[in-house]
Image 1: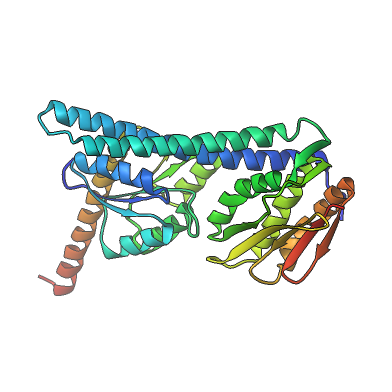
Image 2 (image 1 turned 180 degrees about the horizontal axis):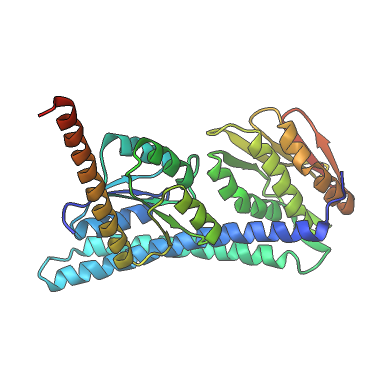
Length: 208
Length: 143
């Protein structure tokens, strides 16, 4: 099997994540667009003599505020992800970084009707590593697990001692899904100085 | 545009709530679905002048739902909405029989024009179907 072109693959991963986030942002803007249009409709109806209830206005404004909050969250995720390529080695809070990549993969899980669960302790754990490469590896492991899990089931990402990040599927890991990513995973994990451990329904990334 | 019956399909509940209210205020009769499979079920229960459907949805997406609907009702008029207006997806959708393809956020007046067009096509298809039935009856009865 030919060696994966890491530059190309890194770029493809960056594109995949930013495309996913931009898609979600489009949905936020589309929803705000409709609610702002609805406010306009209500104002027009009021001008024509139809009574305008304050409660209705508050409800619509609340929906808009909720979408703005959602959009803000997406932009923050995009910002953190974009900055993860700033330095090839960075000291990071591992639980927070893991939480970030899970948030970024939520949409992929949702499209497959699978719930992505996290078992990540809140206690601080600092590591020096390549944050972009780590996120790429975890996304690939999550992808294998998602392809191995039926709809309405769950995939779990957990952080354990020995700095072990485990991704557990709902069933046995699909051999084809694993094979599709194996060469790339081996290259990325090798560069990180880490190792992968494959079990029946779980794959673990061991950092040290 | 009174009496136009529309099926609105999107997994974003808030989006569907707002758009359906706006369309109803303009005289349309709106049924909503929040998934591709639910949309297929609704399309089997009633005839719609237009189906306005999101492309990317969990489970059965807009393209898959379109395929099923077109197989079961070849004259169904489907307008696809997408958050990513790639030409490739648009071409794929049109090849599968979508009436049109709009990028979100869509201007409601543009959407209404598409729905008007869909209703006109749906009425024309229904008239042709009725004429064919009458023709078949006349031919078989020999009047």
